[in-house]
Length: 350
Ligand SMILES: Nc1ncnc2c1ncn2[C@@H]1O[C@H](COP(=O)(O)OP(=O)(O)O)[C@@H](O)[C@H]1O
Ligand SMILES: [Mg+2]
Image (tube, rainbow, N blue to C red):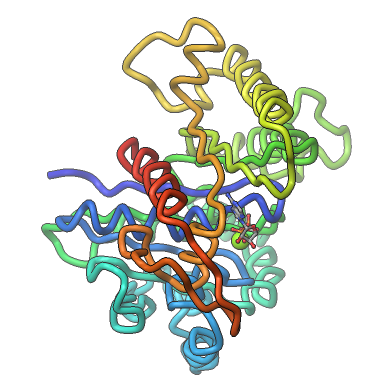
């Protein structure tokens, strides 16, 4: 039978579209794969993708607050707490079947909700990870860092494989490290701007380490510890070009910047192909690389933004106008279809 799969969405930069893309791909993937269970793990304290899945607006905030404030939170914090204390948490206690809250979404879509208290438990997790081992077999660092990886091996029903989508915070906090280790496949959204291209270098250095290791701090880094403990890290699967027209005007300027992002990734691919997912054809030049490892999402425009903020999958967006916080927003049919096609194309590849 098919194995579980797990995708983690990360870039060391905020506002690149991680949560919005997580919402869109998870909702479309669940519709296209009724024979699987699809679970979003929201590893960001802001819980944006959780609210999108819950339908957005103030009602999603009320539901989220209820899940967070229980004595055993029905969120990722509840799960991590039980897993830390017992070594093996019961996933069914912490997931939310999302169509019970948002009827627009498929019934095989589940959420382990985000929770602002991830920030509060972060120092406690770090302390436990850094604890002195009690025996030769004890490895607190690996134990803590494998909590999400172990979660993604679980199934809700024996005969149904699960696909996990993990949303993250841009910071490289310990909970982000757990999220990254939890993904077999890494999706990297980038915008066409300088800071998002710089963030690609940050991403490689933080996950795999840099060539120049600092004489003092070097051994304390995640990358060095992951190497020392032979921890398996995700493979880069796609660079997702998420285009914002409001950030960049001319199409040619956009092309120049996204070419630069691809070139940076390609240089890394040439020196360290093992960081990238295997492809069943040879990648011999940058054109092959772009074809193999980059997906252009183009502009979501109002269609993608409105859909995500109201928790409507693109397949069910059939009206011309939507009300967002009291304002009528027009969403043209051509826009809706372009946006839907872009997400479908990506989901087909997953
Ligand atoms: N392709 C796009 N076109 C237009 N707006 C977008 C696009 N992708 C994301 N956005 C908007 O940009 C903002 C940041 O997106 P978000 O998904 O929250 O990013 P992140 O999770 O990386 O911080 C949101 O307001 C979202 O609606
Ligand atoms: Mg986000």
